[in-house]
Image (cartoon, rainbow, N blue to C red; front, top):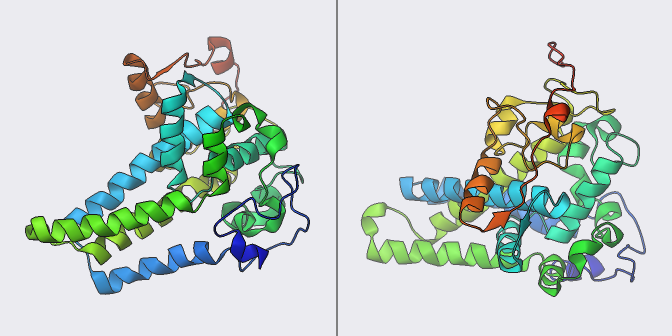
Length: 310
């Protein structure tokens, strides 16, 4: 029963330390919504497609990817720049729509990952648990379900962030509902666009969200398996240009594990880092500030390994 309650209140059954009373490898009942998001993608067979629906799918992939990479990761997990409380909440809200849970849970797990990268304590290491576990399996485990609140006390102080973290299915549900009614509206006011409520729901929410989830998860899995190592980091983090493209800069993972304090993960001009570029543009209008650079001595201290990892 507690697994079903956690569909609506993810903090149900946690003690005051933010831990679960029991730990199990996979909480199948709790993960039914995750499986349902994937299964609903099959709806494309019945709803078809339109350029409008595909465009919305891609737009919400990139928009929410930036909320994850630029904000859940570089801001909440690493505090690599500063912003106002209102902007902080806006991007926490957008990130929460990605179905990757709340900002406190996400950032705390990531801080834990950096502390124990590729050791037995790492929550999602392919070295320790294999590809499937590091990519998606760990998310299904009750062992890692509770937020590690001790690691995120700096942001735990904000009640609006605690709300998003606790009721982490609320925002995705609202986004899915909004997508459906957007499709209904467009079907009536602009029928030439060829979309509908069900089509927009499938493409704008379910397809976009599933692609976004697996795009993000490639950094936990493939970025510790495939690519090149520029720096000796003591783990298997690697740089991968393709993953950097689809994740807006997160694929420069070896760089990041070597110096995670920097806002920038593409250390050189040819290492494309779209999240960093967007944050720089936001700094021009005062939405963010104090972006942390990569010190020259840090950037040039690595020994580049020309061989690609198998």
